[in-house]
Amino acid sequence: MPLVRILTARLVTTLVTLFGVAVIVFVVIRVVPGNPIAMMLPPGASEADIARLSALYGLDRSIFEQFVIWFGNVLHGDFGTSISTRQPVLSLVLGRLPATLELSLMALLIAVALGGTLAVLGTRLRGSRAEAGIDVANGVGLSVPDFLWGLLLIVLFGVLWPLFQISGRVSPRLELPFSSQFYLLESLLTLRFDLARDLVSHMFMPALALALPLAAIISQLLKQSLKETVNLDYAVLARTKGYSETRVILSEALPNAVLPTLTLIGVQFTFLMGGTVIIERLFSYEGLGNMAIDAVINRDLPLIQGIVILFALMFTVVNLLVDMTYALLNPRLRHA
Image (cartoon, rainbow, N blue to C red; front, top):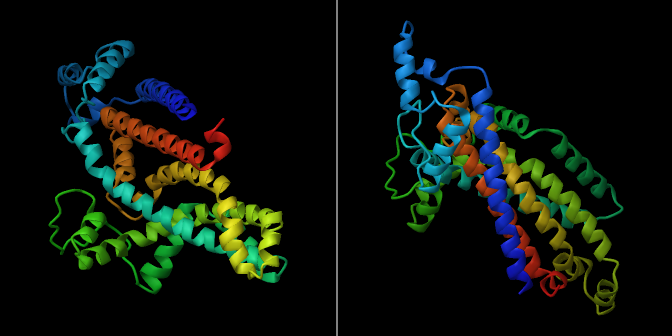
């Protein structure tokens, strides 16, 4: 039953967090100077035209009244209509979400593979110049923000050595026989490897730019945990049985050192998804982050609210899953 109590408490916290985010975002974007209705109308529009559209979108009411109406509609699954596109916000957001999820998951896989490999190598070669080189690489990875990595990758592998695509999500010349917006997943499931190759060619550089800072964090934390666990009694016992140092690290130390890193990965994954906003814009990737920037530029209040609420929901769900996974894997928490 402890897991049930933990889950219930986290769900309540999630609901309170989402409500708080909704209130803050709703108020902040309305007190910022600028009239989104005026941006929709051509120059020379009359005050009557502005008043008519303001009434249509409910912007002529007080902020409290607007929030009550909007929140009531949200509870019924209606997030409003986009001011700039005149389309339902929920369909717009859900239409772009799969692209961002696929990009984020690819970045996470790259970060885990790269960071884990560097951590194991650094532990295996501890005390040598190679470990010092890995520490320097981790420092560089942490010091350079993801958008600068993106610019560097564009110059190297998009201009000097054009190995990957530098813009878009998929080549326009290709026919897309997909029934969902999860293009990469569906292309793999349907064995359309030609489409999968094109999608990966577009996704690899933005995913790598997102992954490099996270890989450095994973490498640092996991290496530190491994260096502590390789000197514990069970690791020493494994060496007396004739295990090689690599086997001791992989089979004995790694399973016990990975738990703290798991929590970090979950927390950092939410920041990684937040980083997609700039990276998607940089690579003209058709995801949720790119849409968010367009919404801010156009002062599209309903769309901004929908995107922020969705990001907040994903952050809280990821953190909830991480907490549950950590509790399941850690016997001390499971039986607390």
